[in-house]
Length: 149
Image (tube, rainbow, N blue to C red; front, side, top):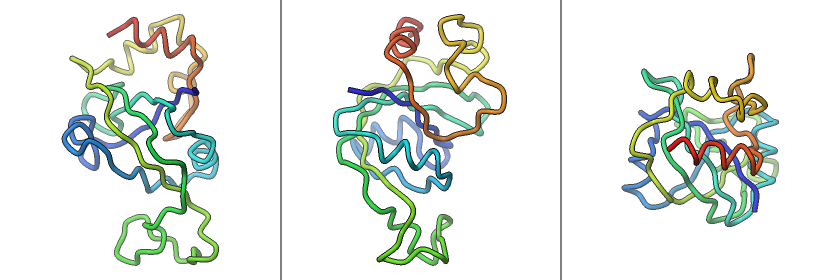
């Protein structure tokens, strides 16, 4: 099993929203490297759910991959914020994945707090200039974050 971190703006999808839904589609990723990480995910992999672009950015809980990657249908929907005019049903470069809720943390582990943890110094999230919405997490980093809850 691999571990990941996936970012979402809470007004689009929050950990509490995922908890309420149980499972949903994770779509709208429009960065090729992040998309490639989605494609590398396997059913059963877990991810830290990160709230971004909000007053309190940080890790809010855990989710799980429940269906392997498939073409992102929002790329083909003209009314979607994630529409890609170059995408076609035959050649859709974007990927979606289905995820489920595993756990909501009692409190968000804030970005500033995460940056203070020496065990997380190599985590791409805390590196300067790292803006990816999907990134891998090592088993050691996963364990270090879990110890902070």
